[in-house]
Image (cartoon, rainbow over all chains, first blue to last red; front, side, top):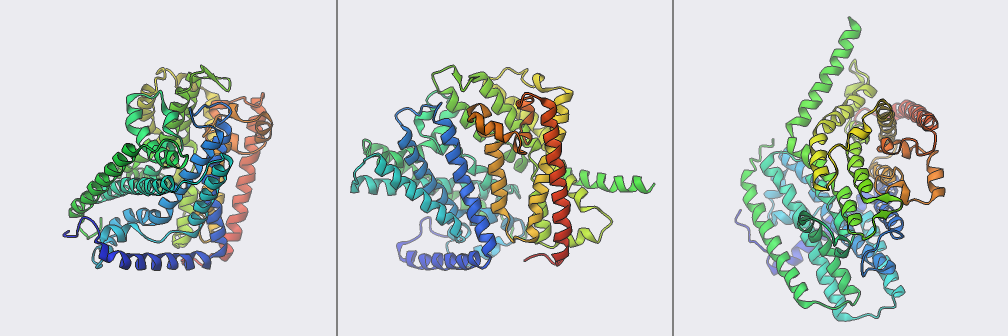
Length: 273
Length: 264
């Protein structure tokens, strides 16, 4: 409970080593079941097929405002990088969390001399997610070239920073929901349900220009987190204030979720439910 | 007497399942509410367009399509593959095999009890959803008919056998979630759940009518889409038989290699 709110810089190396260890363990597990591995690759690319098919079917009928056809492909690429990085880094940990709470295995995570939020969240990503992420990068590079854009270091760095913030924001939200398992005993795949909200992130904010008030509260925040990095990559006007607000809002949100985690841990009896 | 006992034990299993699902009501609610996210996204995107007709559909028709689509999806989309998968992987299948129960019936009850409870809880959620997106509240009247009831039964049966056969692949493939994703994605795209068939090229729709996908999940929304309802029923029945035979074949072959201690 008395853990610091933010991980100190001194321990970053230690955590990176642990992360590498988790990734390599997962990698060897992935490669030991070859047929399963191929099936997981197919499973990962299914989502990509779904996203591409939806966009292909929609494009002749739907106007996404200032986002032309090629720009929409770039947007999709950014979304795929976001989506599969979240999967790669956090999904496995978040997926197992409800069961860990239910059967008392969470004790194992809490009693280790590591940051508990880090340890329950990071469980080593699957190689199939990494492959899908690389596909997203290729899609972005292909669209970037087709749009005839020139590389700009400032925009690129802004893109990386805003994308990392988007990933951490989404992770924090998913983590917030799985942490509710501590209070409500068993919510099952709560994080998986939250994942459905990425549906709003697949389209730019301009696609939701005539929505009711509730739409601005639900759809726009999810859409904004991808629109901002995509905008910076497209060399559209670099809106420093927008990025700063995004940065501050993300930090506050992550801080609050972390506080919530430590607060909710008080509801965990460790005897399993 | 013996028959009555047999029915009674399955009935008890059904009731037990219902109670278990109802024990975690928030989980059930979250799961149902999350089904509405994709339809809401599509409805808001289409509502934002200036034109009144999109791909030959009015905006109200699109809203109705997605509202009813999400309602049918919560009921007709069988997820029994997960139950079959975990039963095989964790060795629970061995426990079922030595008991005087039929695993196929247990799997059916396991999935149907969830579909049943989802159907009941979906109704008020769907009405609230319809109110939010501005759909006239008599929208359910148009689909209450004996034809829709027959279609729903066939649709669920097909979905169940498809999902059950997929779950049986766990006998050979240690981790079938990739194939489960493949199935879910194929259903979402090819059944028209993500985007209505009106947006598809005509040649694709002509090909799709011979596949099982149009008869899964939201068939009630497009009864007669081929021009002949009886042909649709016939094709759906053929697919039910195909998946049943496939299931029987996989089941017999799978039991031969099953170690009864699970796969892990």
